[in-house]
Image 1 (cartoon, protein in one colour):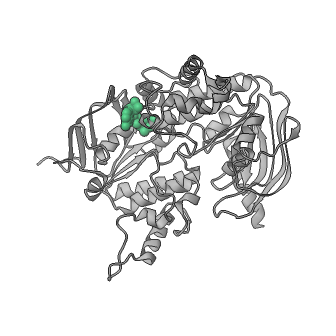
Image 2 (cartoon, protein in one colour):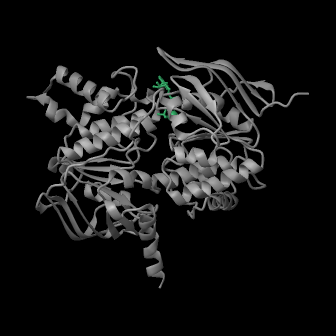
Image 3 (cartoon, protein in one colour):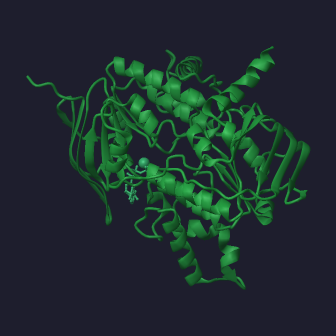
Amino acid sequence: MTEHPLVRMTGIGKRFGGVHACRDIDLTVRAGEVHALLGENGAGKSTLINILSGVITEYDGTIELDGRPVSFAGPSDAQRAGIATIHQELDLVAGLSIAENMFLGREPRTRVGTVDLRRMRRQATDHLRTLGADLEPRRLVGSLRVGEQQLVEIGRALSLNARVLIMDEPTAALADAEVERLFATIAELRRAGVGIVYISHRMAEIEVVADRVTVLRNGGVAGSVDPKTASRDDIIQLMVGRSVDALYGEGRNEPGDVLLDVRGLAVAPRRPTPGRTEPAGVDLTVRSGEIVGLAGLMGAGRTELLETLFGAGGSGRRAGQVTFDGRPYRPHGPRSALARGVAFVPEDRRGAGLMLEHSVSDNVVLSALSTLSRLGLVRRQAVKRTVAGQLSALAVKAASPVVATATLSGGNQQKVVFAKQLLTRPRLLLLDEPTRGVDIGAKAEIYRLLHQLADTGMAILLASSELPELLSICDRVVVLHRGHTVAALPRASATQQAILAAANGADAKEAR
Ligand SMILES: Nc1ncnc2c1ncn2[C@@H]1O[C@H](COP(=O)(O)OP(=O)(O)OP(=O)(O)O)[C@@H](O)[C@H]1O
Ligand SMILES: [Mg+2]
């Protein structure tokens, strides 16, 4: 008798109109292995796992589970067969609690048939603890930060006790400590014989976690490699079909005058939101032409600071002084921030005003309409040119600029958010995890673009959980801890250790 792999996908094909998202793909997943799926934005990774998880039901080819052919009528059908999926785009219900989201449609019941709320909350808490997340299960998901939502989504998948676990960029919004916890959990699952499909754009993670690597390119399998023997360059070459040199640009212009000056900024919100860390004593400056990084652990208040600077934080009493271009700066809302020349690319692209059902073109030009319209009339040629220019500058992969944004792969949607903000020609660009979900080639493009923008005098303030990213593109790194500035490290003295020490070191001080 031959041993069957847990999952065998054979000859998988899928077209969306003219786009061949998957072509003749073979993929197996064995019990107790982590099979990593790599590829550029739009290569077909999410489409392939959407087929395996029952989200897409029309496709070519066959799927076998334990050697038996299966076809799923929908996601819950796949779940019943033992396949749990953490999707790239978080699909949680904002108006429901953490526990409700985790057990939606399969709530534990009491003997009389009502939902057993206590058991549900206890189980939710247990699953979250496994991941190192200490979240009150009654909190509404809408009040959580993106990283926390991601943990809830992972917790939900764990609670299914599946035999096959599919993870589509599970760490995109997680900080280093959470990633470590997740990897520990993955190691346990692997020992328990769970087969794991793992998608990520972070090469360092793949090297740590993967037993096997399959690379997709343009919807087909470009090759499979053993991550223990293959070099990073080999893998990248398979992904992009060429070698990517210099991921990070070199040679920068000298920064100019101070554009943004923040002193002792603190916000006391009228109604505090649990889980938010408002600025509680932030000092920082950003010069024109300078790229300043914001580092800190999850919950350090990076996102909240950026939101405050964009006028998108909550209202409340405010202390400290903020000036922009030498004048007092206190935006009442995003509009007044944009009017002063401050733009913001938020972490959560769905909440970022991306209208998914509208065309890519509409989304890109939306915030620049005033520049592009003359006497209230939008100049169609100008729009077309601008959109085309912006899409090619960022290497956005879309069938055409008029397709619905929802049809773009996750990473390409992220680039559209980026393109849209750049069109407002800001003087200060605020970025929250700008390369989240973006593939390695496009990352290089974005870094190059940031350097170009800085060289034209744009000031850039960038929050990232990827330390290598901060270290290599920033002129200075400001470290936050619980809403306070705890360090501002110039490029020369900014090392991974120095940043981590600052991010954690404040803890030690407070404990004393
Ligand atoms: N519902 C859809 N309608 C039309 N085209 C689609 C749809 N879903 C995916 N596509 C297209 O199929 C191709 C593969 O997309 P997919 O989402 O699988 O890429 P991916 O490898 O997951 O990329 P990323 O790393 O950016 O998440 C892309 O060209 C995408 O635009
Ligand atoms: Mg994807």
